[in-house]
Length: 422
Length: 79
Image (tube, rainbow over all chains, first blue to last red; front, side, top):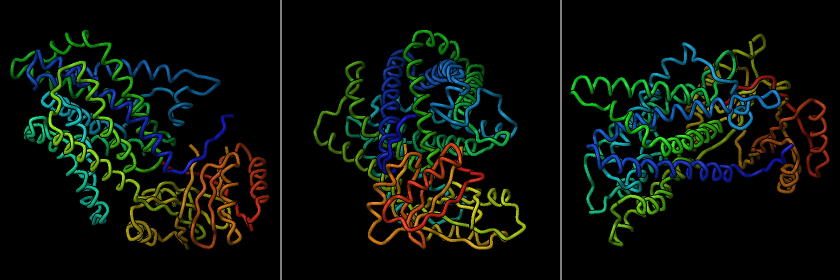
């Protein structure tokens, strides 16, 4: 047996953050090199489609290969279930229930990725593009506010303002200007697409397939398939209606860049798996924080790439300073957003004659509940809760629990300090 | 595989020492210090009931632990 390492949750978070981040930063580097090469040949509006097609097409091939590898049985267990997701049990077709979420996830992924390549082909500088990806946290907050009629807490408002301001500073281009076209694409195309993608993705992960939890490997594979279908459909419509040759151009470039894109998409697969694992630790906001630390790596990556392709590098110290301040603000804002959390256990006694199996399903539907367990003993159910502030715990959880008539009594235990095994 | 929550009551002033020792016990998945009529909630993952007994025995040997209550998990839904 492998000796367990026991660390505070804080440290666990840093380990996941850094690994996933380095993976993502490398792929952004490869993206930049290829888009800048393509930009020399095609207009930037076409580059994003060509490279988008390449990424999803070659990505699908590499993902299928990786998935087949992960399906191999080692001592009776699938490789994928041992190293990636315990819920994985071979590749399978999607169920009817999953279908609609996959449509939204695929559409969201197509929109945000193509939009991102468009911005990248316009700005060429990863350290200017990456901070903007993090503004997505603002949108998630907004969606939550509207959906739940829930006022955000001070810390949420504070951190999202810091993140937005930081992103604007970080995206200042070499000439000292802020360009409107990529900025608008980021705010109105890329980030909303990402919100659609991540919300549907989360829904998919929470679905139960044949009574078992859904696995991240199949979700990833089918998401790529749906995304590719959307990308091809839009390109076809564009080709036919305006007489362009996007698809033919894409196929030609597929062969040329196959090696590089294959490496980039394989790394993406594992970066994504880490992202899902972070989601599995129970916190969407922490996961966003994991992705936020990529901002720090954007400057060294930009430096390395600038040796491979021509990237305009800021000349004056003042510009570098402004950029650095922007990046620090983004990271700081997201860290404080993710780490300002309260954990608690709730012990619940059910009324006699109540079916516990149904009751735990009801409790599981309450937002902020991280896990529910039916247990033997004095209490019937132990639920674990993760929320931003204690008043939210009252509004979101206590009030909902009190409205369930099957509950006889419950007790709240606030967690003061926590350790977890990696 | 069996998962369980173990609730722990401790003697005043011993918490930090107990934590240090509890962290070294095998099969402990998570330790939370809580406020309320218990002081710690430990989540464990063992292969069978016998291992669970051995684990609680180890906990009982730690100086300062007054009482433990074990809740075996029958069904769990989590992310």
